[in-house]
Image (cartoon, rainbow, N blue to C red; front, side, top):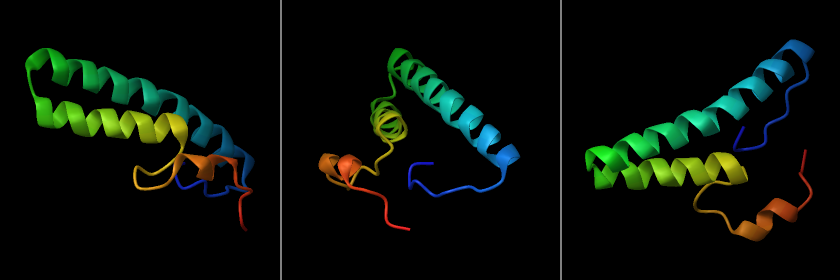
Length: 72
């Protein structure tokens, strides 16, 4: 999902969308738990993961990459 890989089968597209929507919520929930429990290292990693899922960019990529057309 983050790497923007294409899926051709309809059933897999539906499943991919479901997982993408819920993975962002789960990552945010885990981030909140790590903050409340006082685990700064885990909170930092989960915050990075949340950003990567929501923006669909790896953390090492430039933000302007979102606007480039996908190369197939």
